[in-house]
Image (cartoon, rainbow, N blue to C red; front, top):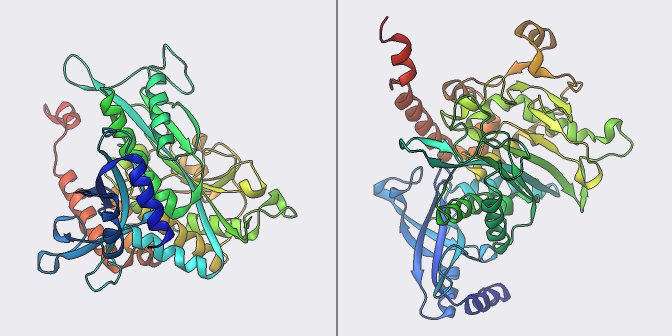
Length: 442
């Protein structure tokens, strides 16, 4: 028995765990799991070593019914008790990798897609770190049954206007019990909108954390009698929810985006990585802002990062480079939203940034004016383009971008595009109340 498995068995004994959930995600980033009862803690050893067979044809984006057998193998490092389940005869969770029965990694597993991208940069001696900022709304129902924000608070408000203080407190305590290192929590710009930030880490650990974060928040808030949504734009006329992603590359323990002797202390690698993100941003939007609703958030106004430019500390551009330097030097990509699959999003952003480094794609001079204030003529003079305005535009941009397409692999790209085209077709044939109000009497 390895030390790692021994530690897991010890933790299971300590927690009094009765049920083990084997968790993975589908192509959309939706958590899936199977629960296994344990007779004794040592039963987990065979599951970790051999995995568990399951039907992959029932999972969106996986396999067809005529070739449906897949295997889940738990990652021992992902062991965690679930604080929202009963403590007595409690439940723990492992995040799993997916394999074919012959032991080969399943190319439709989103976690494998990210691992494959990471393996490429590991060969060059790099470590890809990322810190996402997923925003969310706490919502309820009014007396008519309509979905409404939980409060009327705005950015950084305090009680009594901010009705989410106690809820965020419970969320932070629950997340800390899941080993999250929480940096800050606060009310966001929109009514009922909140943000809880956790510290950046290696990309795979962070992608796992995003899935756990969303699952935990929904479960904990449900126990408190509220609902949470990570929908990018649930309410008209207010800011939507983003998931800004702070990214950096480390080598031999040092942040290679930092150069103390360069202008603005930004290395060539930092600038080239930024250039790659900007060049591929239209195709990236299909992956990092993947729903029809994402493009209700990505509109001018409401602090939406739609302008393809970068700036130093400038929050009106698509890419921002915050003021901190040294090992804190990072590039912030601002168009992702929390509806994305973090494994696919991180892999695509990494491949785009590395393409920038490989081909020395310089982003030009930073934009240090408020781009939100510019009209279309002024934007054209500066050569500043905008992100796609719809899912239809986004997936057509993805079709033309070989770098982002290859980051997903043939299997995931094909299934992803099938889903996006179907989603757009389902959306475009609907008739909405807005249209009835505007055109019924035409």
